Length: 420
Image (cartoon, rainbow, N blue to C red; front, side, top):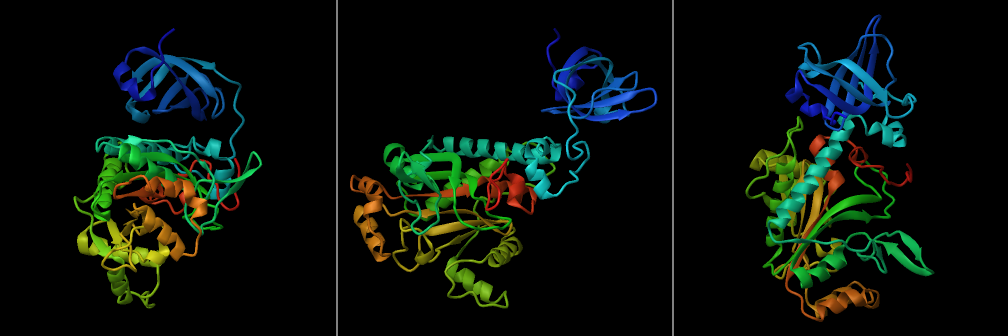
């Protein structure tokens, strides 16, 4: 049997008889001829049948034919003198035409039929870019001496004090789906010094917005022996640059990651925003989405950067493990990275002394007992450390300019959706 050739490799086989395999992307039946467009993972190829007929769209087929240079054909090539063999039964018609340049269906219909909708080349592109981004993230951190880890997603206590979690029955005991690998990645700094993880996280927050999900993919990193949160910011910059560089050639407008991403302290950002908006944000402990957009616009105008670090968020809005600014204790050694008007990454320096953790929990009126296993790590010697977490779906959605993060999510889970 002739070895299978991918569609993308056909230009190197002009004049050869080859075998391709894939799905019937489009069937165009004319009076005396039928054109089949075959789709495989690498692209589209036209097949010319000398008689009307041919299997319907989305049928899985194998085609042997002669690779012929035809200028008017898509890609300048087509398969002639073909033999078509079905590899499954003729497909039922999908609820939308996958061969059209854009999918003519609303988002609920697309999500209800995600396994089919994702076959559309434009929709699939988002996840090709996401996969390349993850590969770039891994490569960048591997090059900095990080070790990839895989931590439990079933945990005995909440990672973020006061946050909503999904409770589960763990063999008769209460447990939770992990909001992040935070506790584990900090502990592993004591083992490897530098660690990262790519995996699912869960947030039981009843948000029904275009930017929130109940489950998403988090790109986490944690590193030890830092002098402050700026060391973490530099590693993040390197990781983001690696993600952009790993994305294959595309029509998507990719950002330039500057050698030094501009930054602004939270207090200074509030002062700036007070002169840019009708409302006065001073005194608020966080940035509203509208303010994130204003700051991003300012960074692009002032610094020519689509990225902006906002540092020094108030301690009241950061998790208990966040290290305060010693000179301004009400503010933290933390940051958010804004990208094209949206908070993309949260990170910062962590506490690393056991006594500081006990005091931090007491100051918030929380018992240290639920965190006993976590806190014990810090009684056995931990270096100054910090880290960050980047949401993959948000990153992909912002890169592609998608209005809803669900469009960058495989089989999304949100307030209303538990299937498919």
